[in-house]
Length: 278
Image 1 (tube, rainbow, N blue to C red):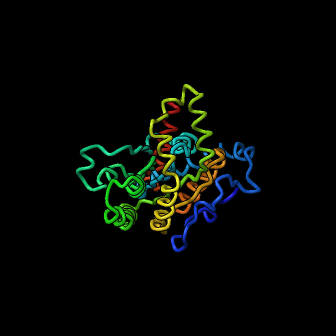
Image 2: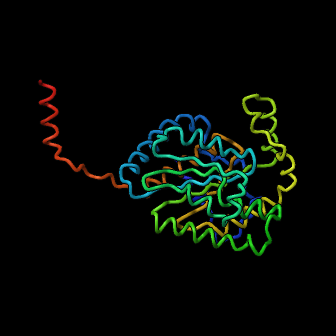
C-alpha cells in the first residue's frame, strides 16, 4: 500500500511555490488499474475505522476540502466517502454567506457544523474562503483578512484540544488547462450542467491571485494538529486514491479504542442459547 502523507504534507516553515508543484503527478508505483483494485479495500478500511470512531465516542474527524472551481471536491466526497455510514458523517457545503452570517464573525457559521464526538464531518469549502475570496475580490481590507490566519489557527487549535477533533485539510491542486477540460465536459453532459455558473470564466481571470492566496494560507495555517496536504488533482483517480489513503492513515494514528462491553457476555450467551432451544 502506498503512503502519501509525508510527500504531500505542507511544511509551514517553508515557502510554497504552487506553480512549481506538478498537478499531474501520480508516482511511478501508482496506476489507475491499481487504484481500482484497491478502492474496495479503502472502502472497507474507512468503514471499519468509522465504526470504531462512532463506538468510541471520544474523538471526531474534520475533513476540509479546498480547491478552485471544478477541482473535484464533490468527486472526492462521492468516491472517497462511499463506504462511510451517513449515520456518523455530515457534509456541509459553504456557499456565499447569508445576511445573518455576515452580521456575525466569519467563524460563526463554521463552528455549528464541526463534528460531534464519534462523527466525521466533511467541509466542501470552509472558513478558508474568508482568506481567499475576501482577499482576491477585496471584500474586506487587508488589515482584516490578514488577521484571520491566526484566528483560524486558534479556532482549529481549540477544536483539537477542547473537542478532541482531528483535522485534515486537502488542497486539490489543478491546472488551468484541466479546469477548462472539465468545464467543457460540464457543457456536454446534461447531468452536470447544473454545476455551471456565470462566474466560472470570470473567476479564471483571477487564477494567479488565487494561487498566491492559497500559497499563503497553506503555509500560514498548516500545523501538527491540522495539517494541509497539496494533492495533485488533474488525474481524478489519483486524487481520490491519495486522499483516501491519507484519511485512513490519519484515522489509524488516532489510537481509537473500541469500548469493552458493559454487560455480562457469558450470561447473555446463555440467554441466547436458551432462546434458541425453546
